[in-house]
Image (cartoon, rainbow, N blue to C red; front, side, top):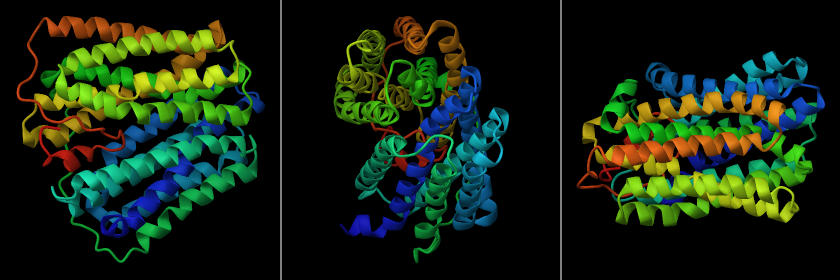
Length: 406
């Protein structure tokens, strides 16, 4: 309890930020549909979010070094609030893409500040409990954010203003906290080649994870609308995906710690292919079946990033972990930025099932590449423990650096 109280301001800021940023994605899809945006333009909004997210990840450590944690958090939050509040002032998909880039920039910057704060204020004795609580708060916020779409009217000033207010409210707990802000560590260098040299399979895994997660979360509401779900049902559809992913982390970690991580990664990817087929088949069997399919899809695809990251860290030295985490986030952003735009185009051309066809093809490629890599070299020994790594900032590697191999 003392641990939770000491980080209460940070965790409350995380919750409010997740409610704000998590709600804008599905709201933009439904609003864009009502305003006559094309599928491609709706996909562009999701891609813009992840482009802004990557820029925020790269720039945030430098901003913290210049102005400190609290001021950096305020600056990033302001960028996100502007992006949210400006939506209904300019009804144009390309202007909205800039606004979504601002919200992605805000999310990455704010999470970087929060994770740097957590890293500086924890030690080996409490890091596991701190990160466990952090992930619980973040996941709970994500779940509630998806459900908010059932009460947020599309293309409404009130809806976007509410999300903007939540974003601004995230400023209050952290900026009013009496806790002394930590010293700023050195910003990590971005070296994508490091991740590729250590583990090409991990790079492929995080790219495919980016494709799966971004395509589903940013274009999934469009899929839901086209298979007949109402706005509140779309919220439950997206929440089922997040819930399935959260439930799968423990068995994924258990398997990844006891078996060759490459086998586990390949089998989860095979499960993802099967889940894509199940989701398409279940789309005609009623609302409950669609929710179950989303739960299964989330359980199959969510752990792939953490398994891939754990495999990469098995080959890394301790002083490489921060830069390796940054490199993996870079490759994740590549997949996440491209996926929504490509998926939206495919849905426009071939129908809603194209969403899961694209994801299945990506996982087929990952399975083939995984088998090839297994024949090239043996499994890493020794291996560190599996950790459910949030895809939130370049600095997340610092939090896990002293807990073992991952």
